[in-house]
Amino acid sequence: MSRVYNFSAGPAVLPEEVLREAADEMLDYKGSGMSVMEMSHRSKTYDGIIKEAEKDLRSVMNIPANYKVLFLQGGASQQFAMIPMNLMKNRVADYIITGQWAKKAYQEAKLYGTANAVADSSDKTFSYIPDCSDLPISKDADYVYICENNTIYGTKFHTLPDTKGKTLVADVSSCFLSEPVDVTKYGVIYGGVQKNIGPAGVVIVIIREDLITEDVLPGTPTMLRYKTHADADSLYNTPPAYGIYICGKVFKWIEKMGGLTAMKERNEKKAKLLYDFLDHSALFKGTVEKDSRSLMNVPFVTGNDELDAAFVKEAAEAGLVSLKGHRSVGGMRASIYNAMPIEGVEALVRFMGEFEKAHA
Ligand SMILES: *Cc1c(COP(=O)(O)O)cnc(C)c1O
Image 1 (spheres, rainbow, N blue to C red):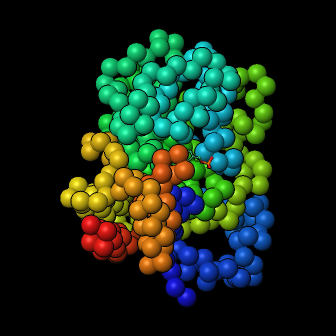
Image 2 (cartoon, rainbow, N blue to C red):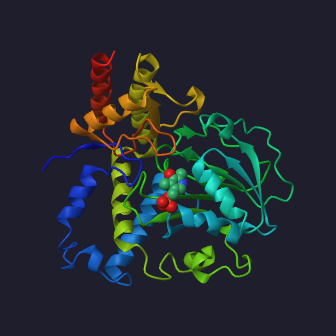
Image 3 (cartoon, rainbow, N blue to C red):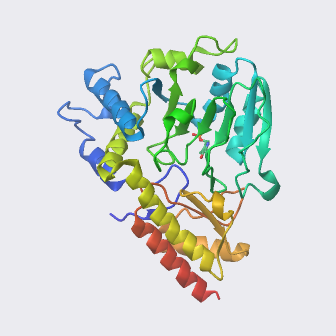
């Protein structure tokens, strides 16, 4: 068996320890005589798994009691509709457009009401986070929406926008659990887990209880109401049971590693290695303004498409895979999520150095 260093943006690398544990429990989960995949989601054993996953996430993120944790499906993309359907009481919301995911959410919201783009960084191909200290927030906005870490462009909000008292809704798909977070600053925090937590198929929504009401837009399907899932503790229908089980293992892994403070230190150390190299390289350069850089997704280019392609190919041959940039940006992107060991980033930087020498 040989494992590669996988820099995929998502689905992405998982902690090897977690995969081994899951492998050990594959045929017989703790004496149940069956795999978690084969188990009724109404069984006592599974109830224990989902409850413990929620408890561990609450502890890792320090989630206050007045927030619900929901394990849902439909990808982060389904939240683009669920958020306006459930929260747009006045049918007005403000969106900060910092990349394709924010833009898609904004366009979806337009199906349900007035969505205003109150800030936008498309003028420089989303290479920075706009100043959000004094935005023209709409008086009757139901919420202000951000994509906190922009997976494709490699930018991150290092300061949350001043929403002038409006509810903040954040897509944290690609920075979930990468550093400590003050949950009380948000009304809704959500993300697909396939970037930084677990396998594709699970979306986690952390939502303040007062935002969960029956007052949703007319025609909102039962399955797309937060209340449906909150009232049923995420067991209204069959949940993505196996995926939640793996997420639970990842929460325990994070706790064991020292929690989110330790995760942040580790992530900063990894990102610094790569950014320092980029800042001093004669061949490669980062594409993002320094004060907007993501700890998780690091896009870079040589400025020459053929060299970029050669780099991606040769890196893969050296066991450094999925470094091709998003199709809309080109170049390269290294996603260095929680589960990427520092050795992986060291190997990448070493390889970049060798490639640079060979092509200088
Ligand atoms: C990947 C991604 C999405 C889309 O996720 P799906 O689960 O495929 O719908 C949305 N937002 C961000 C920030 C992402 O990285």
